[in-house]
Length: 82
Image (tube, rainbow, N blue to C red; front, top):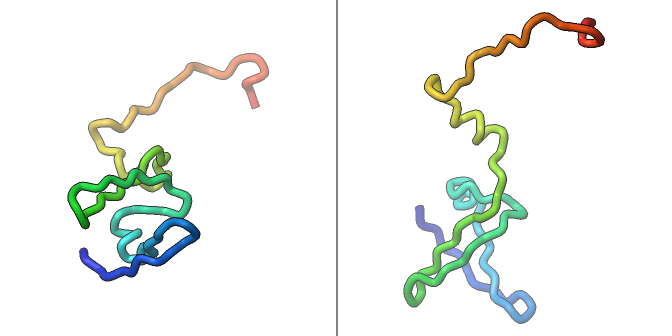
């Protein structure tokens, strides 16, 4: 996906607003910490770092091969009985 954006001044820095379509495709969310690397002149790579996975992302990783079987822990004893 390629979209146009404009570099703007923000204090002493420069900023680029990331369009929602790009953020969605890259799975970027508000508050994400980013690693920004200059690959070549004019080419910058941005990657989210240190981001916990969402529940939806974790559930999407469940497969028949890694699904845990139901465990039995024996009969309830003492105060465990309801």
